[in-house]
Length: 218
Ligand code: DC
Image (tube, rainbow, N blue to C red; front, side, top):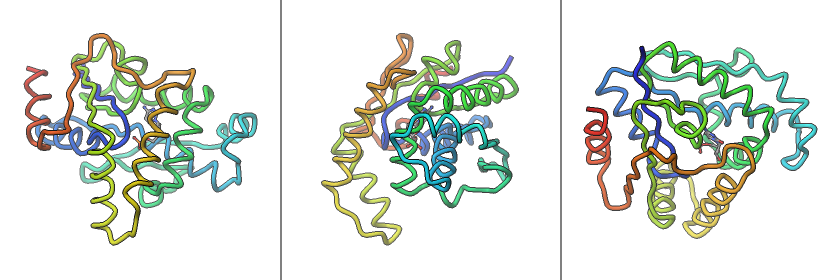
């Protein structure tokens, strides 16, 4: 039986940084489910689909074949066989992903793939609905969060480091808007699973969070 760790939480809580480190330390596979929703969003943007066109999203998402591979321990997302890793980290794609991921047809397709991955291997999987929906029987479940201020500042620092100019207040507004959308959507909204452990990383270092989660697995 494979061991499954589920980490859910809002945007910018540090899920991917933490999950990657845990995967490395425990020799597990890291599955970034947000990247799959982002690849789908990229496809929809490329096809000129409007965010609020539910019917078009349902129709067009069928043509996107999304799979993942691993190269030197890195997850690579393939969209119709094209490596799109370098194209999905923009705010535009993130905002589209937050809208299109609310669509049942989009979720059906990607959740199936996520379940299969977790069956085959020991995984640390992060997202919004992993503990509640994708892996309800995960061995360890964590709900990782941080205040909106802290999350906005982390994102601001990350973008500034990359040399991108950005506005802290605007980032915070986007984060709050995205949280609201992710938490209030009808299908698989972001929420803490009943059996998930709440970890607030606002005043914790990355390593402290990593150690905390590893200790929960033991
Ligand atoms: O974690 P992220 O920012 O890369 O995710 C992008 C969007 O995808 C996010 O707004 C919500 C959605 N998402 C989801 O609905 N379910 C998941 N398991 C992961 C992400």
